[in-house]
Image: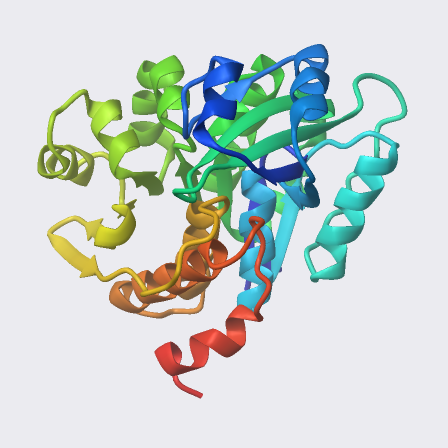
Length: 328
């Protein structure tokens, strides 16, 4: 019996979200709809130019942990924050929704990380991320007993950028497999895939049981032109893959078993966190013994809730929304 259903590991960030037009994004000189790493000075410059903003705890893996907890699952999180205002906000927000987070805040080094999120009229989000303290996550933060007692350890692709965090991720995967637990990975972002393609391919083949990716990420990973080609390639690389296609829903593949899942109809406000809560729904379903098609429907439900409002974490209790899907 596992102590936790899902343990997630990633960059601890506070999201600062604001609406703006496409011209604002163009003036910053980054790729629209992508995540771009920035330093503290550039983050301050962009923040000064933003309009009214909403601050909310984020970070991809932390969002997924919050989603698992909202579905009624047992979730834990590993990430690094500093002993500052944002660090206190992040820790409080995670614990308040029932996620186990016992990492002590750092008293030296960089401040808690932040992600500036610009949401354009088409609901697309462009992110400017200053990792801050999160970039200093290393192997010492990996609690072997915590990993070994979690049914699934979920790794954030973004954590592959800082070398110390990469080693922490590798150690967590090794511990999980020694304990006969599953390892899940989200590719996180097309540019993250571009930076680490070869290492991701090796990681997926050797250490990943469950892969999450969107259509752009998976085709970029395998350097193919079509989704079907990528689907064929990933089938032989890991136990199962959950691949999202936006308004076209998603596809779950596990060997010869393929499930096409419809997207939940919803008015799109902000796509921030859609993939994170998709993963939460899928992993909640998987760790509670539901068949893959049901896991996919729970995942779709989570994603729909995320995009129905500003911010990456659930506003509605996902367990209540899930009752028509799972019964009870």
